[in-house]
Image 1 (cartoon, rainbow, N blue to C red):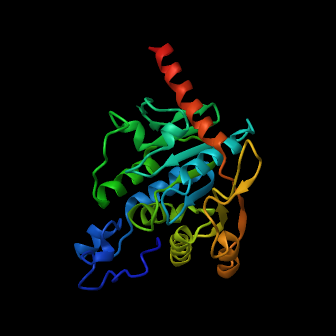
Image 2 (cartoon, one colour):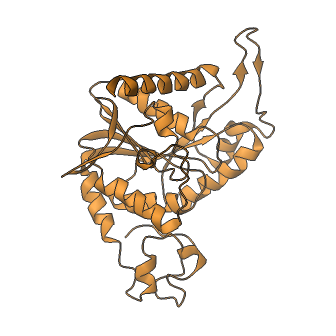
Image 3 (cartoon, rainbow, N blue to C red):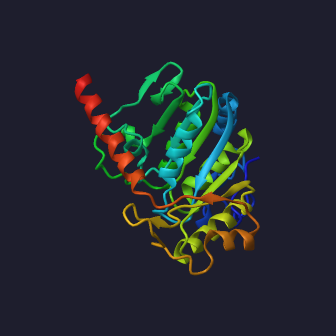
Length: 292
């Protein structure tokens, strides 16, 4: 059976399916009906679907704006450098899907076949799926409650025709709520290799990242390690390094020592990353004009 929130009232409780912690849980309706904590049948369906996916990695952070999507995109691109490795990048940031822009795929649409939704391919060995492909405009707001978000995540995991995949990278929104519980619960039977947690050096970010590490431990999600993003800035003119986000409490290194999790590395605040994202977007617009 899949993991449940640590404050779950339990299927036999009078509050089953009705408590505050039940909001967004895949089993909420079943518990509220008194049918007991029968697992969502989608969990087994997703397990079957994921048999063709060797490794599943979540990119998490309790804090917004630390570069989860940028890191997810670079990780997917890096792994796809090996042409014999098949990569899938799934964006479950339902309200703020930025993967289409970062990957230069704005304006692309999802096609459906008999075997499910087809991902949008950046390269022959790199497929992408995002709710951003389902919006009529990049400026459209997604105003959904938890159950509808969970339904969308369920569809992404169950109905996308990824094919044979070596690595599935899942880009998540900030926090420890609906989307995170859903993806962990739906993939529990299919096995998740672990989470890469992204932070920036300053304490206001580390506070939320500590919560994310606590979340992973409560739902028994393995932590692969922590990446400190925006870790220093080297001026391209004078070559002097500046701490844009000062690590006043020791940064990710001290946090990782205290919480006994691996520090995977540091990524500098580099203007070239922003330039590359702009180039991807510009190239995508040119290709759309040519194809039309």
